[in-house]
Length: 334
Image (cartoon, rainbow, N blue to C red; front, side, top):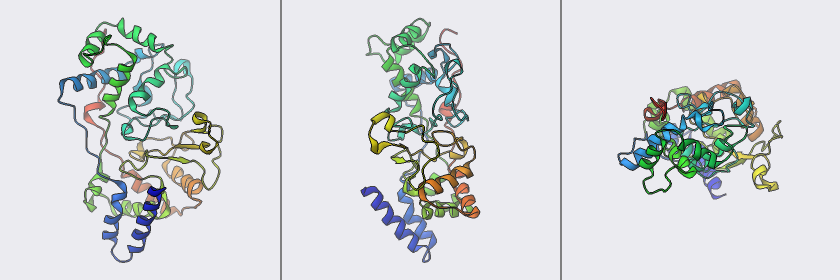
C-alpha cells in the first residue's frame, strides 16, 4: 500500500509539473523505474562458470523430456526473446499447456515465477515443467536423475559444477544449473540509456508514449526497471476479464481474495513476446494495450494515445545476451 501511495504522489507531482518544464518533469519520474539494466557477464569463477555451462546444456537438452522431443528452450527460446510465439505451448504427446508461456528473459529478477507465483526462484521453476504431465512429462525426479546418469559425459559435468555434492547428479542440481544459466538472461536496451540520463535515447513519439503510459495509469502496476514482474494484480479491476476459467493465484492459494490475481508481467521486450496475457488472448500489442486500459483502468484510449503507448512499449525491446543466445555446440553422449 505504501508503494502505491508513494507512486501516486510521484505521478501527481510529475503531471502537475509538465506545464512548467517537461524535461525536468521526465527526470523526476524516472526513479519510479529504478536503475538501468546492465548486461550480464559470464562468471570468472571456475565453479560458477561450470554451473552456467552445465545449465546451458540442460536448458537445451531434449532428453529431459519423456520422449526426448522437448527442452526448456522449446517453449522459452533464447533467440526468440524467451518465448515460442504460441498462444499455448505444445507439450508431451501434443498436449497444449493451460497458460501462455511467459518469457524467460529477465525472469530471475521477478518477485516469483509462473503466472501464479508458485515457484520463488528460477532454480525452483526449472524443476516444474520437466515433471509436468502436459509438458516434458518425466515420471519423477528419480527418473530424471537415472536418465542423465546413463548418458556418457553428464556425470563428469555435474561433478565439475557441484564438486561437494554426493551424488553429483541430483534433481536439485539440475534446477540450480539451469537457474545459474538463466541468471545471465538480461536484456538492456535504449530505455536503460534513458534511465541513465540520456533523454535522446528515445524518440519524440516514444517519449510521448511514456508520458501517456504514466498519465493513463499503466505505471500503477508496471513499475521498477522491468516495468512489472514485481507484484500481483487482479485481472479485470474495472471490467471483468471475459475468460474466467483460469482463476489465477486462487487455484494455488484457495483464498477468495486471490481470484483472478496473476503476476504482473514485465513489459521488457513486450513487442517480441506475444501472444499476450496468461490466456494468450491478444495476438497484437495494440489490442493488448486497449484491453488493459479498458479492463484494468476503465478507460477507452484514443487511437493516438494507443499508438503513442505502443511506440513507447516497442522502445523496451532490448539486446539478447550474446552469452546465452547460441545453443550448445554439442551434447553429452552425442
